[in-house]
Length: 75
Image 1 (cartoon, rainbow, N blue to C red):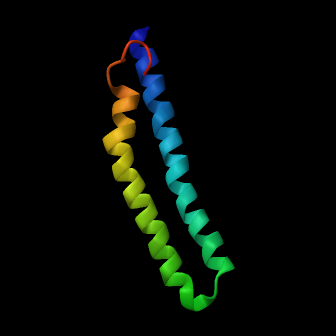
Image 2 (spheres, rainbow, N blue to C red; image 1 turned 135 degrees about the vertical axis):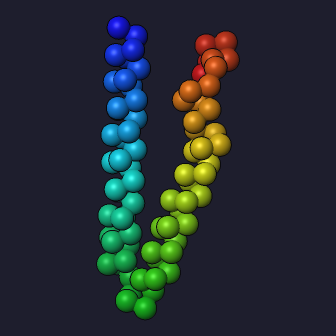
């Protein structure tokens, strides 16, 4: 039963990750549509850097909060 729970949790994390990763291009298109055409490259670069930096920060901090050991039941 615990193996099934672990599998379901991993599938949910992958589905949520997939949804968040595909929201980024949508935000990029919305922001590019709101700006002048000469600024589109800057907006797309900003969104790419945002996603890259946040992914690294999640890997450093968020992953350890998700799968790390509990600190007196707090995390």
